[in-house]
Length: 159
Image (cartoon, rainbow, N blue to C red; front, side, top):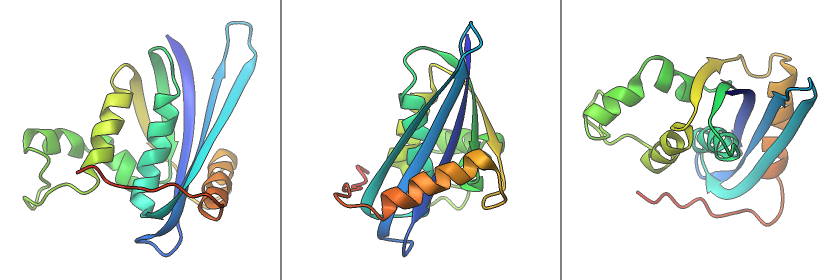
């Protein structure tokens, strides 16, 4: 199984409901030792930081065309804790309700993320944001540039 590293970041201006964007960097090393990298980003008209953090992870995982061993780095505790503290498992058992018995926010993206992660073995790792981590800084640049761009997309939650 190919090992892939995904770095992600989301940004929102005027959170919530301002423009936002995500940035994603994928890196893998092929059998010959050659490093391959791809970057993804997109901007949205009205969104939240949490939605963009999720979209960054989704974009990276959806870009993979075969099952991989993935280490996904994010500066979002919202994203990493959901898996590392098994919030997602609780949400699934409780019909997408949180511990306060309220509907889970961004359920449309959580479902999309679970589907994107399903074929892979994914380890979620939290990194401190804005702390000089080169890949996190690159993803932050991609996300903020996308948020500040033209021709922004609509972020319409499906649920």
